[in-house]
Image 1 (tube, protein in one colour):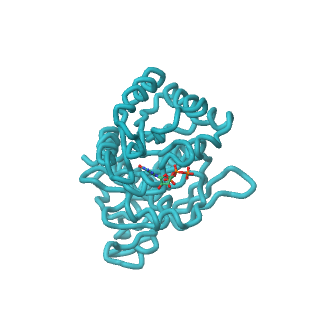
Image 2 (cartoon, rainbow, N blue to C red):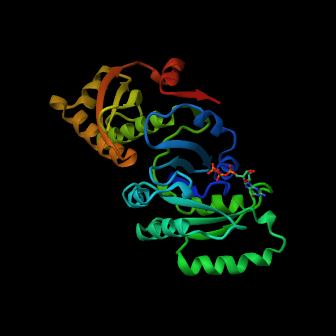
Image 3 (cartoon, rainbow, N blue to C red):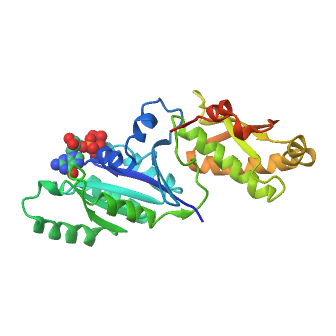
Length: 297
Ligand SMILES: Nc1nc2c(ncn2[C@@H]2O[C@H](COP(=O)(O)OP(=O)(O)OP(=O)(O)O)[C@@H](O)[C@H]2O)c(=O)[nH]1
């Protein structure tokens, strides 16, 4: 069974968060982060390792450098974390923990978020024995899933961080196709959430012959609403009828289930509109793949 881990990287300015993310996801990050994002959740990188897909994203209240976090943001941590499987909290091991970092870590404990502590920049330590008391002090105050000494610059410990994240991955479909990169990861993720709901509800009636493309996804300027319009492509006219269902019942059920999941993930009210179209042999059509926001590597 395939697994997915949704991961947020948090920590103080200059701790090495971007460097670590780059070390984990490699060059894919460039294509992902350079585009302006429309939603508050921002996917910053994707990495596939065997049957596990790691999806890195920023989430409100957590992605800002810790020294810029306000009280208000700390309070929102609890509400905005339902989809996080792991928080990777990066600290510069040569710097003492400050009150804000401690508060944030404690609020993560309160909301039962698994936290992997990365003690970065160990290459700067003259004597590695200096780490033991630091770790002892931190673990006496905060509960961590794992504590990993790392030097991103020397590429030491990064593999262990990856293993710890993999250990927290949950059984799930992969939201992003292997070997493809996208500059619109939120659209791809939303499309896959909709497709997954349809496949679950339809069971074997329309096996695999469904593709979903999110054509529009934008947050309203005046209201906290995310408008998403999606097209469901079937291979046959008869499949279209099944997807829509009697009096539109099936489509309604699937889009309601998808909307609930999308609202939970993006932490915003979602207005989802789905259309069903027949496109024979969509699987071989390059332009369709492109309209899903994907491209071959
Ligand atoms: N010596 C050393 N320097 C590192 C290491 N990891 C990152 N750095 C350096 O630390 C600085 C900050 O790294 P970033 O990855 O930009 O840190 P950040 O946490 O993303 O910073 P903000 O975006 O400001 O929040 C850079 O100059 C990195 O080259 C490390 O393992 N050892």
